Image 1 (spheres, rainbow, N blue to C red):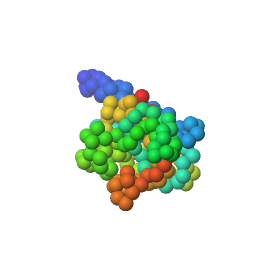
Image 2 (spheres, rainbow, N blue to C red):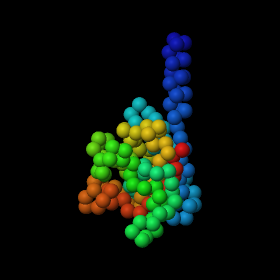
Image 3 (cartoon, helix red, strand yellow):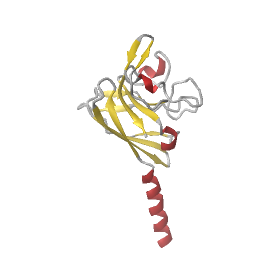
Image 4 (tube, one colour):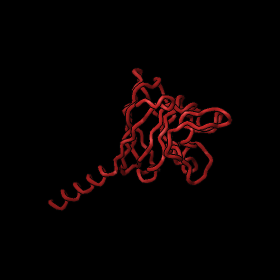
Amino acid sequence: MKAVLTGLMMATAALSASATTIDMMDARTGEPAGTVVIENSSYGLVFTPSLTGLQPGGHGFHVHENPSCESAVKNGDTVPAGAAGSHYDPQQTDNHGYPWSDDAHLGDLPLLYVNEEGDARHSVLAPRLTVEKVTGRALMVHEEGDNYSDEPAKLGGGGPRVLCGIIR
């Protein structure tokens, strides 16, 4: 019995050690917007948001390739959090899709739901990710939803980047 309890305590400690808190900020103003805690589970990576000030409804939610929330110029336009680059895609699938799909960007996450008060509090699960795989990347919330496809709009149709945080 003692060995079983010791094993459970060690497993719990190992899981807790893998939790990381990401400070999220408004991509345009740099103002704080809350946090997202990421934690490994036996089912994949759990993202638990505590975000405020968003428009109600679904929002595209992605891991981006670069650890930056700085603006960047693209085609002559300034893009808030544009230095984060595109969706994290180490296998170079060049395909936006479902979080569980092996032929999609690794950084494609489930839709982030925001309640009528503008708060996001519901956890989402990314079955192909771990904290170790996303450390040194950026976490992004987009203005619009996500249809998990490149059609009719590229990258799920999420639109502008509204919140960004660095995964350390």
